[in-house]
Amino acid sequence: MIKKLLTINLLLLTTSCSFIGGPDGYFPSTKEDFLKEKVEEDIRLPDDLKLSSIENHYPVTELEDSINTQGVPKPRQIFATSGNSSVQLRRLGELMWIYVEALPSTSWPISKSYWDTSSYETIDANPLTGEILIKFDEISVLEMKIEHGIKEASTEIFLKQIDRTSNEIMSNPELIQDELSNLVNYFAESVSQFSGTSLAAQNLNEMKKAKIFVENGQTTIELSLNFDRAWSSVTKAMEASEIFTNDKDRSNGIFYVSYDEKNDGILSDDGIFSFLNIGRSSENKKVNFEGAQFEVKITEKNNKTYVRAYSKDGKIEEAEKLISKINESLS
Image 1 (cartoon, rainbow, N blue to C red):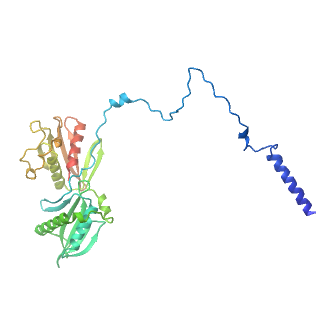
Image 2 (cartoon, rainbow, N blue to C red):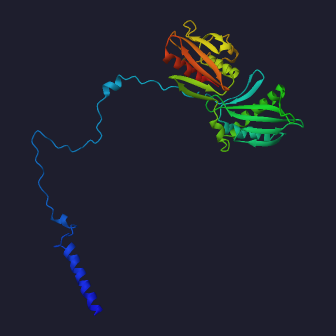
Image 3 (cartoon, rainbow, N blue to C red):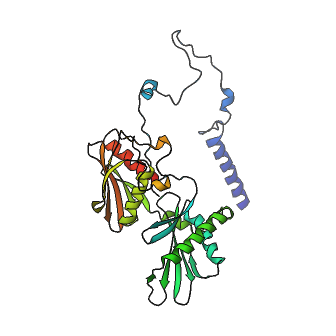
């Protein structure tokens, strides 16, 4: 009896599927309908209409005339540019440091190797902070600090002697100068052997001393320097850029600048840095500010200094050229 019921149910199910989805069912299969298709004749268009064989999905409007008459401004200089690689010992008063035209992550392994191969004992070396601590004698230690410089992709290296008992800085300029001079020579001799970079010291590359930002439509240079160093750096940058300075007011941090037609914007040979032969070369460095009068101001706030250029004649574009030119030569 059960077998008969199963057979009947199976027949009913098969019949139902054919009734619903078969060729004569409610939902017939359409997978072979394409075989019944016929190719019709081409559409006949009127004589004044033509069928395009190429369809342009991205049409471009003709703008040739407007592009030719459009003035595209030159991009503003954001960071100081790098010149030839060099290593220099610099001094400002009692402050001495080494300037290297290389990233701190490149200068770090060379500086560390200098102390590792010296007669002194390295107590600690931290690539994250750029500090190397050296045992100098029984009463003092030497602390070297590797920092990012003012210029893009540059390094500044400082050295100080610290009393072990009081933890105060000891004044010994002769020792500092001797050790920094030795390090300069070591850099010159070893730079070809240290062409790579330290991954551990990559963090130092981000700690830049110079930043650019726009405030009220005016470009401002922010320097992580005290006023004395900022004044010296801007003075040197203006000398290097051959920007003529009429007068200076150091107490208020102001340079009075104008284009001098007689000297063609070039500093005279008896300038402060004339012995370095700065500001006497290529003509493309000469700056013409079209007779406008400017003030370059350095202000100090929250342990930082800010450099801005103002035009007395309201020539904002010329003031922007001036601050950009100074920024190019900052180091």
